[in-house]
Length: 243
Image (cartoon, rainbow, N blue to C red; front, side):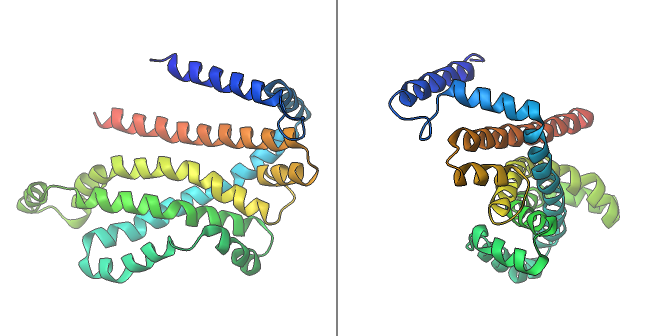
């Protein structure tokens, strides 16, 4: 089973190589061409520069979105009034494509990193909020009755019952948000900046430099997987410490 992903990836590369034989390089370059360009961009430092620029937007956006999700998700899960007041707006916000919000953010916040960070926070906010609410509401009434019978304070109930109970689902939402934060950053970079992987992809598109476009895409995927893996490791460490 462990060799399954390797075999599928090998088949993908083989299919890509065969398909590239039928098209000119500016339409579909061969995997070896993209790999050589990836190495060249990496050795020059250009790829690292643009990757770090995107990370400097995606990671703060992920943290801000996660904090906002918990601060809003917790009262929604606890209070029917907060649920009725806030949930419709949160759900309705997901009906607006974030690509449509990005130009507004650039107008309001300017062309700096603040607009791109804010867009990342918006993108990751909803899935984390949903998981926080599900985690809090999933606590068994019997456990709440037990804490009440022990005269536990609100803080003790939160710290010893609600937070640990919501943590697994919250971390699941955080893993989803980790990859979405890259989507938010890349989308914002498409609309105006002079650095980042989105800028690199856009630059390659403008120059009809397909290998450079694919290098940017591959770097984006690798970076997203690294963020996802880091969150996953943190999740496993927390679960192990609790066990």
